[in-house]
Image (cartoon, rainbow, N blue to C red; front, top):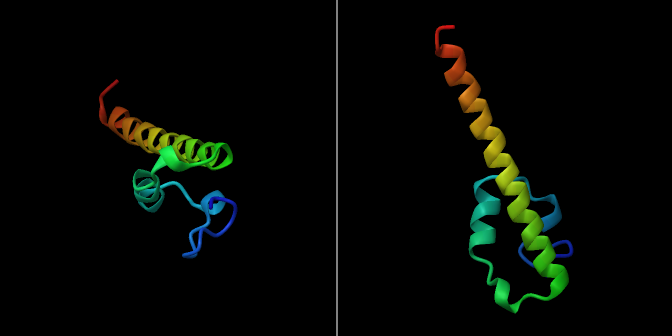
Length: 69
């Protein structure tokens, strides 16, 4: 399922972190996955979390730059 194309053109390993990946991960039933597929989902959540933290850090930097020294 997760190795390459899952049948509808979505490629897990190439999915950029963002809303599309979040939606796909959220709709995935992890209970029925094998170990390899489960690791792919865990990796996807990790990429998504890293992306979100980087976006948050960027917003914090902009906010901090607006504060007087």
